[in-house]
Length: 125
Image 1: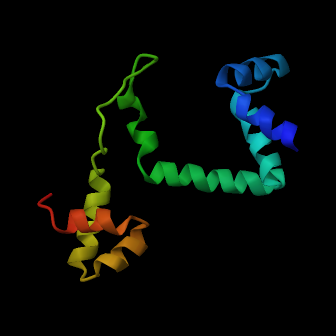
Image 2 (image 1 turned 180 degrees about the vertical axis):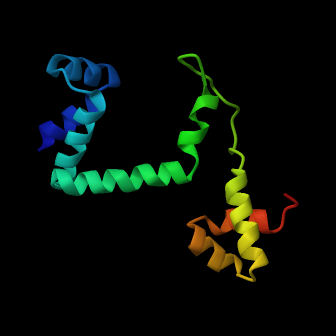
């Protein structure tokens, strides 16, 4: 097991791409299979987990904001600091506030950090 852990820590993205090219499979599929093995899950269970994680990223607006992070095929580096809160999230918090919900209820309902809800609650968006 120690050799496997050592090998995992030394695998680079370049190595992953070379291995996947040699096997003629997508690098992400190879990475997912390795993750499935590490988690000791069936492929079906891992795919359910992966779909849940992808939905989380989608809900955070990662997918819709991707085009703004690229110029052609080049990744554009952004400024350091926190990303702005998506307007959909702001509107959802304000709707909960208008319905008379508490900040904690809003946080739980929307799956947002209470600090983010608090910030929106008390800001003039």
